[in-house]
Length: 236
Image (cartoon, rainbow, N blue to C red; front, side):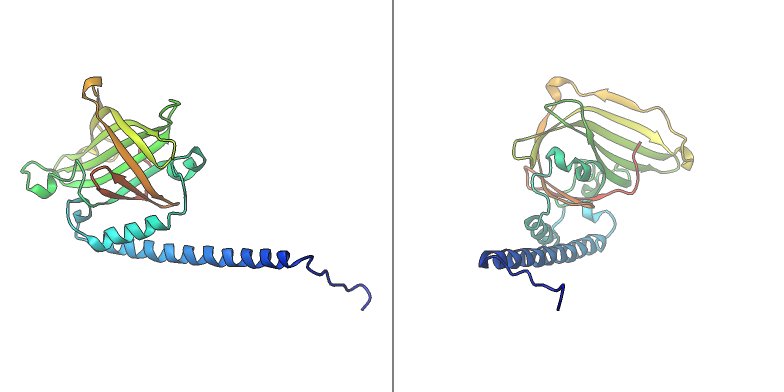
């Protein structure tokens, strides 16, 4: 037929390239489906735990195995690299800690003056220091019966290592503030901020072992596993 034509493949190598691309696309799609299924299972397992148990020291081998499976499928290499800051930075709610946290361990030990905890979060932002380009704020909100809420924060920095997966973390200030007095939104007492003296500062190794748009995992040197979910709330 006039005007019709067929463009032949130049070599067998062209066909091999087409096949490789198709296989890679199918493999990527399969990995994405597998990752989505594992994330769904993980969130279901965490949400099924009794209130606050996910943040207390306890044994949950099924959850820990799901975390390890997702770490193996981590979609972002070098998560602390500046190229991934658009995904990394922001406010993240802590939804699971395999060995508890500094603010929740007392809750599980029967400490008589422990306060009901409302929320634990971590906010990451850009920092002007070249050697510590990530600023962190770790926070927790406690319920003060008949009074309001108490928010405690610790601010510091992350200094990523060359492999852009782990970082040296240190905190320079701690703060407390009574908020929502008498249950009234916007009614707060002034925030009290205290610097941490240089000789009292402690450094820790933090590993970001998984990162995607809405989930982030962290590992501490003691083996503690942390699962963060991107928060719909903005912390001021």
